[in-house]
Amino acid sequence: MNAKQTMPATLSDSTRMPAMEPFNVERIRADFPILQLQVNGKPLVYLDNAASSQMPRQVIDRMVRYQTNEHANISRAVHYLSETATAEYESARRTLQRFINAPEEREVIFTSGTTDAINLVMHGYGRKFLKAGDEIILTTLEHHSNIVPWQMLAEETGAKIRVVPINDAGELLIDEYEKLFNARTRFVGVIHVSNALGSINPVKQMTAVAHAHGVPVLVDGAQAVPHMQVDVQDLDCDFYVFSGHKLCGPTGIGVLYGKATLLEKMQPFKGGGDMILSVTFEKTTYNAIPHKFEAGTPPIAAAIGLGAAIDYFSAIGMDAIATHELDLLNYATDQLNLVPGVRIIGTAKNKASVISFTIDGVHPHDVGTLLNQEGVALRTGHHCAQPVMQRFNVPATSRASFAFYNNMAEVDALIAGIRAVQKVFA
Ligand SMILES: Cc1ncc(COP(=O)(O)O)c(C=O)c1O
Image 1 (cartoon, rainbow, N blue to C red):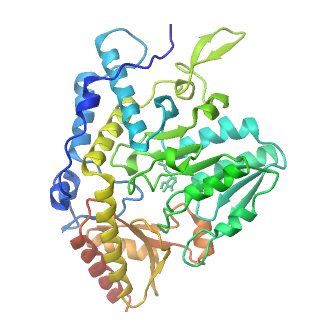
Image 2 (cartoon, rainbow, N blue to C red):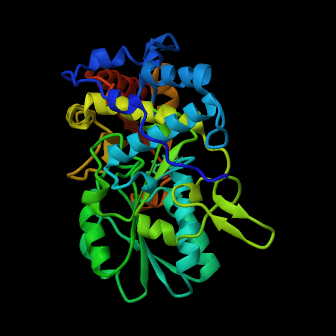
Image 3 (cartoon, helix red, strand yellow):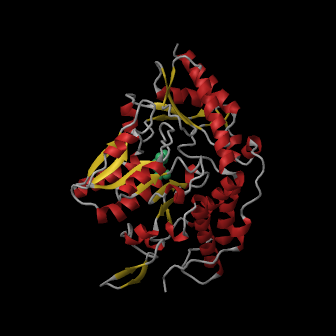
C-alpha cells in the first residue's frame, strides 16, 4: 500500500521547545555564522531580510544531522531510515501547525514556497469553482505572486479582478474594499504585510467582511509570519501561505494552510506518486489531505530545517521579536527622517520592520551599489510589487528590511552609508 500514514508524535516533539530567556540581540547574533562575514572589508550589515532571512546554527546543524543520520525517502519503506525521515517530516508539520495554530495537522501542506502555495489554490480551488463573470478581489499592495496566478485564471475562465486601492500612507481603503463586493464576488486574496511598504493589513476584519458575503479569503503571510504571532483560527481566513526562507529556514519549502472542508473539495494541483490511494489506467483515487497536495518526493530536509527554524523563533518568542523589531523600525524611521532628501514611501500607522525610501537625485540601483561597498545589503528595485511603485509614481525604491537579529548599530551603519551616498552625488 502506497498511502501515506500520519506518524505518531516522536519524542523530540515534546522536547524541542527550550525555555525562554530574556531577549538579548547580541546573544542571538552569535547564533548566525553569516553575520560574522566581512563584505568589501566591512562588517556585513544584512538588511535584506524581506527577500530572505539568514539561518541560525541550530537550523544548519539540524539539516546536517538529517543528512548525516536520518536521510531516506519518506512514506515508502519499512526500514529504519525511511521511518525516521517520515516521522521527522511529519513532526515538522506538527511544529508548523502549532506555530500558526491550525486546528488540524492535515490542514498544513508543504509546498515549495508562497508562490507555489498560491498557484496550488488557484489551480485547486480557482479552476474548479470560478467561471466567466465571477470576480476576484485583490489589493494594490499584492506581491506579483498573488496577482499573476489570478490573472492567468481570469484569462482562462473569463473571471474579473477588482483591486482595493490604498491611501498615500500605503494603507488599504477598507470602505472601498467593502464596496467591491457584489453577487459575483467569489474570492479574496490579500497580503498580510506588504513586502514593499511594510503596511500591516487588517486581514481579520477583511476576512469577516468577505465571509459575510460567503466569499473565501487567501492571506499571503510571507512577510507577516517572521514578525508577529499569526493565529489562523483567530483570523478565520480560509487559506494562509508563507515561505520558509523568510523565516530563517531553507529555500524550497513553504506552507499552505487551508481549512480542511475547502481542501477536501479542491482538485489536486500536481499528479504523481504519493498523492494517490490507487491507480489503474481507468481511474485514480486520490489520497487524503494533506498528501493529496504533496505529489512526488517532497523537500524532506527543507521541511525538517523549517521545523527547526520555527523551534528557534518559538524559543525566542514572537512577542519579544515583535517588540525588538518595533524598536528597530521606530529608530530607523526617526533617523531616516533626519536625513534631508530622503523620503520614506509607506507611512502606515501599523507597520512591520520594512522601510522603503528614495533619495533625491540618486537612482535606487546606485544606492544599493554604493551601500554594498560599505558592507550594507539592502534591496533596490520594484520588490515584485510594480502596482505599488505605480501608485507612488516611482520606478523603484531602496528597501531596508529588519529581522530580530539586527541591532541599532546596523541602523546607524545604514544612515552613515546613505550620507556617504549623498556625498558622492552632491
Ligand atoms: C509578500 C510576499 N508574497 C510572496 C512572496 C513570494 O515568495 P516566494 O518567492 O518564496 O515564493 C514574497 C517574496 O518576496 C513576498 O514578500
